[in-house]
Image (cartoon, rainbow, N blue to C red):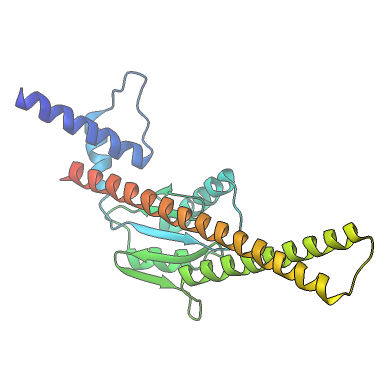
Length: 219
């Protein structure tokens, strides 16, 4: 019974590794054992995490197309590339790939902002850290929202009173209302950003767990 359980666990781990590498499994869940072991044994290089240039809204199809373009680069041929989110890709090289060469090639691509290898983060000289740029973009968006809300409320007040009043009392009331509305909008934006960061960390942890399962199969 122990041997059967061991074979079952190995089979599940092997299928997970194959799925991570994009290998097809037939309708009955059967694979060529020799080919599967060879495929898993090859993918033993250190993974690289790619953070795409912030500030762009990418569709799922665009991220897939980008991953395919990167896979066609000379130094990345044979690597598995997985989209963790619409901003992050993970490259799983084989043992024959040079991590240094992969890093240099990736940083030449305009859509790639940062490359993480282990505990090291690499970016172009002079570029700000990825997380700092994301924070600045969020703050800019929140400030822009506050300005737009203030303008809309002021215009609404002017429409309601039938004239573009320059009365100080009206302006003070409008500014107070605008300030309160802007604060609420900023709070909602901060909560959305916090949820997005938590979701990203969960996805990265799941990707790391898949990588650990893959390494166990190789052993």
